[in-house]
Image (cartoon, rainbow, N blue to C red):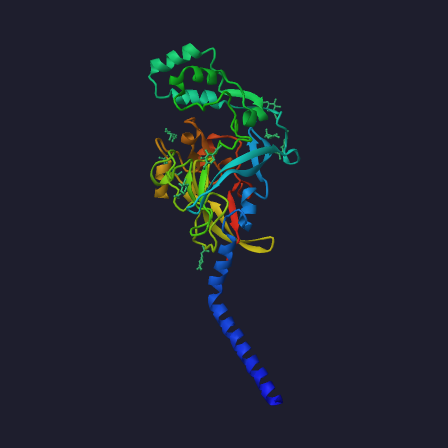
Length: 368
Ligand SMILES: *[C@@H]1O[C@H](CO)[C@@H](O)[C@H](O)[C@H]1NC(C)=O
Ligand SMILES: *[C@@H]1O[C@H](CO)[C@@H](O)[C@H](O)[C@H]1NC(C)=O
Ligand SMILES: *[C@@H]1O[C@H](CO)[C@@H](O)[C@H](O)[C@H]1NC(C)=O
Ligand SMILES: *[C@@H]1O[C@H](CO)[C@@H](O)[C@H](O)[C@H]1NC(C)=O
Ligand SMILES: *[C@@H]1O[C@H](CO)[C@@H](O)[C@H](O)[C@H]1NC(C)=O
Ligand SMILES: *[C@@H]1O[C@H](CO)[C@@H](O)[C@H](O)[C@H]1NC(C)=O
Ligand SMILES: *[C@@H]1O[C@H](CO)[C@@H](O)[C@H](O)[C@H]1NC(C)=O
Ligand SMILES: *[C@@H]1O[C@H](CO)[C@@H](O)[C@H](O)[C@H]1NC(C)=O
């Protein structure tokens, strides 16, 4: 009995170890598949999934640094986002809106929302821009008729008014009274402020429709404002192909992956390019930063040509006029960092600094 038992134990052990060995070998061969399976399982968006808790409320408030140029007075504001009006669709997508609120951060600000700053008056500038194609007589008539009301091209207002609370400008009233002037150059608003009407609004950014990750790529944006192509840029530039809605990004990143996400502030997608490997809190990450694919005007990156409609600008400033009711608005990295020297030469007091002014995201690449 004894030897037999030992034997069966031995056999048992053998079988077990063979099993473990096989499992081990299979696992070695399969770990990538398994890894992907487990990761994928966690990366599905449904009301009870781990990803949902992260997505519904952005876990960390995002800091938005606003430098109101007086010319130099930085104000920090932090933004808290929340998803609203969530609809789960049968086609494995979810439709939602963003409810965003901004809070002034006194600790990290050099000034308050009540500080008076002198800045250009975007309203007057928009009017000048709207009438730029008019005949000389037309412009003359306009300027004589409205001279008394035409505000200076400079304004002195509180930071709060310039940013969130808005201020009255006589020209806005004219625009509302004389729609011919308005065209699409004036926002349909009673006041002007760069973020006027956005604090606490869930409708400002419009509706998003994105993949929940069951079959496709979690977080891939399919529709914005109920369309798969924005009206703001022509051809591929207005497209939403393989674009993240901004919160979930593809896993298993490589150094030739492009990080492509949608920005409702710019009404377009943004592409970040691999820059280098770096360590963040002891974890190896891939740093992707804004570069030619984002900033070039089509000279180096031909795909970018469709972003500059009409007159083109030197690289480094994006024409977002179409996204701002036609008013002449341009977006650049702070201090025209990575932009054509043209801009630095025409504006005094800007000092681009790689440490402070770059735009980048660092991701843990996943299995490598
Ligand atoms: C909520 O979403 C549904 C479907 O996406 C839409 O039909 C409805 O108009 C939205 N409601 C609000 C208040 O936006
Ligand atoms: C998925 O279904 C919703 C609701 O019917 C629809 O609004 C959306 O356009 C669909 N998305 C895609 C990518 O077909
Ligand atoms: C935004 O709105 C909230 C109330 O919803 C308010 O507490 C906050 O001060 C506002 N932020 C700014 C920058 O005006
Ligand atoms: C803070 O503001 C003061 C003037 O109010 C200015 O002298 C100083 O340079 C500012 N500091 C920073 C970091 O911007
Ligand atoms: C902005 O500049 C004006 C002078 O041009 C000055 O009176 C005012 O105090 C400055 N504001 C801030 C917040 O530094
Ligand atoms: C990208 O990775 C490959 C190996 O996977 C390496 O040969 C190449 O040098 C890397 N490129 C950059 C820009 O780091
Ligand atoms: C900016 O874009 C608008 C609208 O697309 C266009 O009309 C205008 O000519 C462009 N301006 C410049 C300077 O490129
Ligand atoms: C595009 O940008 C390049 C580099 O900044 C510049 O040399 C070129 O003049 C720009 N093109 C136009 C049409 O402005």
